[in-house]
Image (cartoon, rainbow, N blue to C red; front, side, top):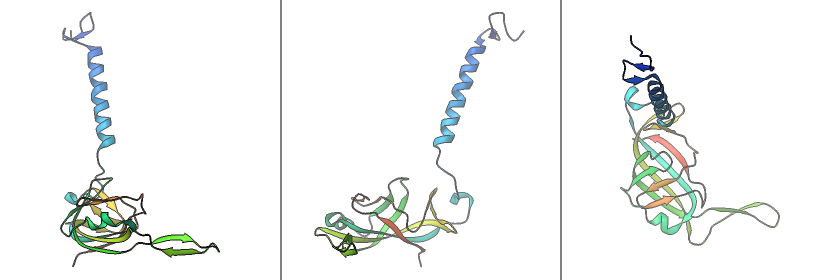
Length: 170
């Protein structure tokens, strides 16, 4: 007989042991499914990746942070850890702050010690009808991100940094 009088399978393994093992396997499989990255539009199973150009704009950032970025520095988005390739251009301008005057009208001004920054990066990705897929993540023009470029971090605590353009590199 397969199950003995003591409830052991083949006289060695308890049915309770098997049930506990199945519960553990199910928990590991469930956790793996839950925490696995999305495979949406994975470049492995779709068209070839394009050479793309991504521009990131932040209207107000401390000047020392903007000056820490150099052409050729690696760039990545912080949340997903997605590589945005390398920095190909950086334009530093006057900071842009908005406030209200005595009549309640919005007034543009700049802040001492702060600058605006436009960072251009060259990367690989797939431009589709709904944004660009880089790695396994989808990004859109206007999306607020935290960007790391070289030794600099561009956080939204100063002002929101956004993807301002995505195009195929010519």
